[in-house]
Amino acid sequence: MDALARDQEQKWIRAILRRGDREAADALVRTYYDELYAYIWRQVGRQEDALDLTQESFIAALQSLPSYDRRKSAFRTWLCHIAAHKIMDHRRKSRTAMVPLTEDIPAPEDIAAIVHDRALLAQAETLVRREDPLEQEIFRLHVYGGCPFPQIAAVLGQPEAKIKSRYYRLLARLREELTDDA
Image (cartoon, rainbow, N blue to C red):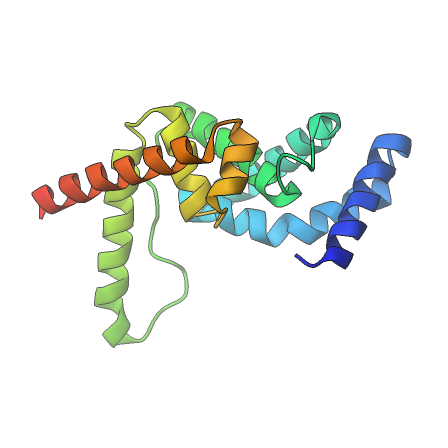
């Protein structure tokens, strides 16, 4: 995000906090809606659940906006952090399947690769769900949210070295488990 966009984002946040400005809240939600929806959908795999969780995440974010500290993390990272918790809560309640095939029909030669990738991702998600909640969140913020380690460390209040260490140990365990199953 460029400096101009960050400045506009901060103006919206200040307007929401100072005046409860609905237009600023709407602009902030519209800016991140598609990205947050995609982040959530990749993890829950159902459109209805993704829509609900996206809405719940934005509601929680707007209610918690006074606690947002831009010195600790980018707004996008903070929003993904909130969504990650909503997803974990949803999983505890529902235990639904992870990632179905997309509704778009790919070319026949791509189907085998997509099915294999989706199956592998579903297996990895099943294994990640058994891990400590902190490791789940690190994994999801990095893999699904595309957040860099320094931002994850800031939003979770942990040293970056610890975040990296936990992430790479988790990857090693996943690799071991997934290759044992093959």
